[in-house]
Length: 498
Image (cartoon, rainbow, N blue to C red; front, side):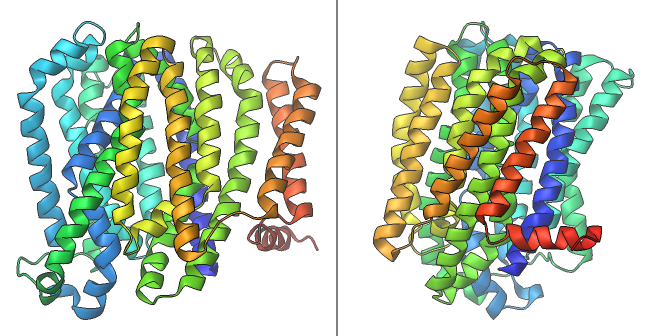
């Protein structure tokens, strides 16, 4: 567990450094670009790119996660054909995506031409964005198995945003000739970080390509086919459910990409709440995969419980901190046009807290022999999400998809928790779960009554320090997390305190 803790802490630090860059990017984006342009690059490119990835990967991340230990233990690096298969299949999958995109372009023009004309104008540039994201994400899954979660977090969370910041700087100083050039370079950033990742892996001798089919592939091929078919279907369903909101808003909500921009702002800020999840998942997934192979259910149960309380403690603290400062922050930094994103953050942010509090149930199921359950819960998720997003968006505007989000994903996580409890007796909650919720509520109440009538940069700082001080002290006093105390002890030693 100490290895997971160390990698999670370092990865989380990188994630938050990346989010700090992302906040700067967002502030500059919002000032330099129109709301339509902001909605296009931060909303539609990301949403459509992730849907493209879910279709193009053809189940390869799950293949890596489940079968990597078998390839590693039975093949030499030079005879290991896993990544050769992964890259070829992903490229073939993306070729199918491109063909489908070309065939259905008239439908895209029909559905989005009036409400979101800018999306139609830059339609073809979504494809290099989706290709880069697809290749990077399958390589990221491989990096997790190599226990290189720190590197993958750096590339996705920091370098990606750093290149965004450089691109914004080029736009601001006139190096790029307007938004048109910006979009074209922006669409290729994931391809750049993918190339960087490949160079690092090749130089360290951790990535080899061979086109000879190995004995492991031949032996497990029937199981691999079964796994990737169901896992791929589940991933497509999940990503459509997660990223469908922006697509629906762009098509049916008045304002089109402007409405997408407001929704995406609220959703982006809500992503701060679950930032540690990616770092914890990246650090734990290799250990979970090996634990399933070793039939070490006790170890899986420990990871499940500790991931739940650690993530919940972080999520509640960050949610309270942002929620109390949201409106003041927008007004203070001249982003009043995004104040409407406050309600989106509230609903989506609460959903992220719930997701964090249920621990690594997705990763546990994904690395087990019960990955078929992903397929069935994914079917339920899509069956609920797609019609709910559409109907609620038509009736309630941008708030509708946020409501659909919290309803459907709460059910989704609930089904998974119930399955793990009934099948293995694992459940992530204990009395510390309740204490964390009560602590967050108490801190929020104290800070709100103390500062709710105050606005401006000074009060943003004072309010934030109060929340962090009270909440941090409460976490330590109540001993809510087994991993916080060692971190605090280390910090005190480094500072020379007893």
